[in-house]
Length: 148
Ligand SMILES: [Zn+2]
Image (cartoon, rainbow, N blue to C red):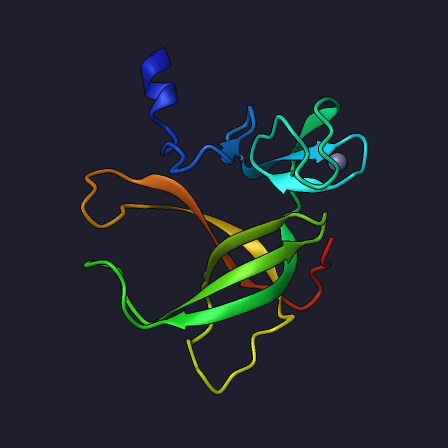
């Protein structure tokens, strides 16, 4: 297998904080402040909590969390199926991240606050694109899974 074939084995990430390890396993990338301990999504050069300019270290973000807030979206871009549930999740490591909740029906009568969820990576072809990209969603935590 040529090197270029290996590189094409995985769909590229749609965003810089969605990465793969050497084995191709996807993860969310973040930054942890060595001064105050706060964790952020993506790369940071300054801590937005304590304003430290050094001691910021790249980390793999937690794979689970709890829904902080949510909204059902009924109208979106052409090609995007609606309704869907837009969420902000407090990850188990303290980072906050926006996403889309899959695996449950968007029901305005349901209270999704504090639902335990996990990151679910998928390779999808976005509307208007010709090839797949690596994206993430959130899905409900299954029985026996820990929020850690
Ligand atoms: Zn800090």
